[in-house]
Each structure stands twice: as structure tokens, then as C-alpha cells.
Length: 137
Image (cartoon, rainbow, N blue to C red):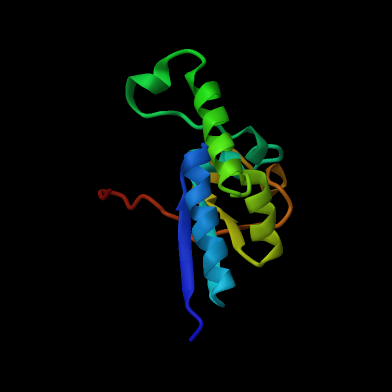
């Protein structure tokens, strides 16, 4: 039975983008439908050139040390290469070619004043909106 799987990318970082790409690709390779929903800072991933600029930011005080994200990103890419894991840009391209649906959050687009032409080709838009109801939220 064909299942539908959805994954969320809300951070424009290497460790924010890769899990959704890996899981979505494996989902479609198992014969399922997969969608990656990009929201908040994850929108940077689907902007032209964004996937190539992703960095890995270590948690805590290590990530705040000047130059540490550059060093940590290099280490992460080296480990991925040694393990024969494709890089983020290659994974993103595979996801597009293999039918993973890439969707931009409409609410985030409105908030950040983005338009569909601000994204790479093939990114769709969600059709849902969240509205504030007077007296609620």
C-alpha cells in the first residue's frame, strides 16, 4: 500500500536539511509519496544557491566560537565523503529527480515577503493558511 510521508525542514543548516532529504529519498525509494515542507529559516535551503551554502553549527558554546561553523562544516563534509554519503546539493538534486515534493510554507513566505520566483525550480506552495481569529490565538 502506497503511504504518504511528510518531513519538515525549519532550519537552513546542514544538520537541519539533511535528515528530511535522507528520509524523503528513502520513502520514495520504498514506493511511497514524500513531501518536504520548508518553513522559517529552512526556506533558505530552497532559494537559489542556498543548498550549496549550508553550514553545520555545533550546539552550545562551541557553535559561538568564531570560525567554528567553518571547521565543523568541513569535518562533517569529510565524514560524509568518507562514508560515501552524497553532499546536501547532490541529495537535493536526487530528491527532485526521484519525485520528492518540495513545498514552501505560504505563511512564512508572507511573513518574509517571498514569492515563488525566489525559490529554485520545482518548489511548490502549500495551500493552507493560518489566520488569527479575533479574540483567539
